[in-house]
Image 1 (tube, rainbow, N blue to C red):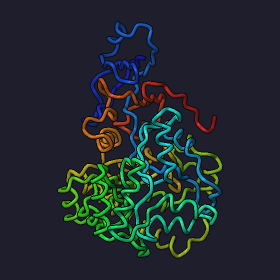
Image 2 (spheres, helix red, strand yellow):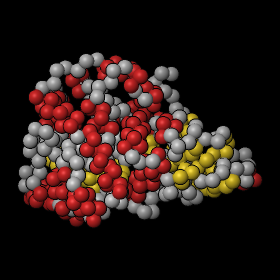
Image 3 (cartoon, one colour):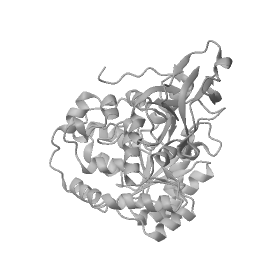
Image 4 (cartoon, rainbow, N blue to C red):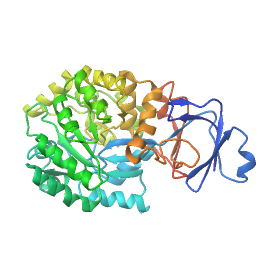
Length: 435
């Protein structure tokens, strides 16, 4: 296959290469890149896609997903989500690699392995499995509050590992290693209501046990103090920037000195604090992947918040500007900013969520090129190291590609104008829900 007449997003630099190019793909890899028209002598009768001057970007990489969840209102939850449908939505929206940071185990590992074997269609799949937390900590308290009884007993022991001591934590990590998790997810978040959270020695025990097994850890944190406990405990990355307060300069310096990357996640909190008022409040890409009944449910008035929900919403709203300042501070200090949508969470659609997140990152101060670089090059290197074979358009790299109309380095919204998604060199057939 040859993809002709495209501008190429050079992920390492976050900019477009000069001029139009032709990209030749074979056996799932990028074979050559040449000036437009030159590749014709090499490809013979190969399939041709004319890019018409559009932009070719690496497949997007989302390093904070929950593939077995739902964007619908939790108060209307009637059954378990459709995981295969969610995976299809990620692909439709140009996300060709995902890291699941919390789903039912062992189901998520089985699904990961089915995708890797080719039995199921989906983006390249990494998974953490259950979330390590304190007894009664996040997200166990949310699951207990929202799940109906007939799901609660099933979901809780599969979605979480509630550990109270360092020894208990080490045993739980050792037991999980048999499932070959790609990363260990730790939650350290007392939220706005003072729920239990892991002690520093337990955090350190989880991270150390994971490292002993050759697995890295990532910590969901809510505050500066929790971020510091995570970094000092030896975690390898932070999920959230945090979301409840502003990082001090000393905290930013500590994160930078430890070389701990941060998955910032602005959108998931913005979506929590501001309900949608009409269909016009959804991005075009959201409307393309969303089920009509989910959109309708999100537009209905929510039930009156209980004390827990009200406290959570107050905290989310109060820190709106602080979360943006956190991004600016981390970026200025040279901390690696990673991109994750935290989908599927309430109001946060699979696949489309990363487009919402990228728009928020640009609004908060990143250039479109910087945001797109983070969602491709940086995310790929976080998952697979400096020699990652994806997240970049270069000879020998995996042919996970997205062709868009327009220039997303000038207007990040152009990234939604997808004309082709290519996974492992195969062109996918895309159909919006409306069709």
